Length: 262
Image 1 (cartoon, rainbow, N blue to C red):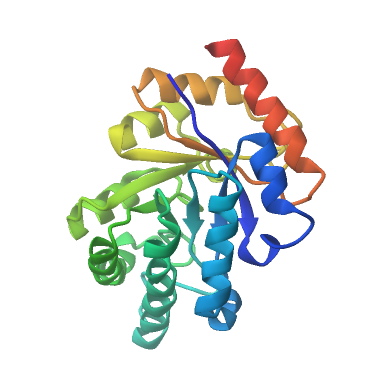
Image 2: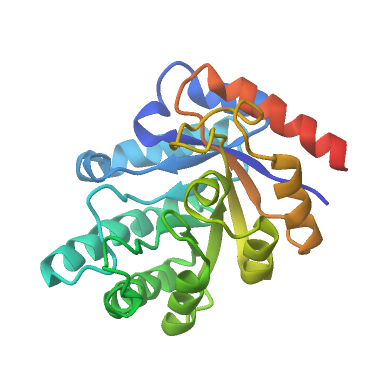
């Protein structure tokens, strides 16, 4: 099984500290994070220059991570939901230029935020992702729904079924599942099945979303990767270092595990 490895990087960092060169040298593609502020400042020229820099460096694959701060796909306030749709569509609009393998988006459900009423979230989230999926279908790109505060995969599965678009798949975040779910990782893999297109790989110690390099927290990533393999999937593996010095350690540790289980 061949695994593709990516690393998260904010769009604003692509042109700094030879970030593109470091990705190329490591044989790693980017998952480009597009914040709302970035999308508002971005010009066609700067977007094209960034895409050209990746191609010139021989980087063949990329993914996007859409904005998520302050957004709420299942918002009961219609104005907030409209803003969310606008932001997500802004990210999708860049797909024809960069040709990402997928765009990660947060589903946005939380038991506490929605008073344990998943139906109230689903009503708005279905409308939001139906509108965004229509744009994604026109752009020829997949949307990958990511678990964040989800205790179980059920809400994301119901959302995908309600929207009914073949462009919707899943991104499993092992760090988030460790913090917010008691479900064995095998159950997540079985639930997402062949629609699992990407996994976020970052470690923590079970108390907060530390985004540590693989092996520097308490997550059994060997078990996570074996569970994915047993489920018959080879999702893109995206490390999410939040410090520059964590990049090389994350990649080295992940590759060591992949060699071990090969």
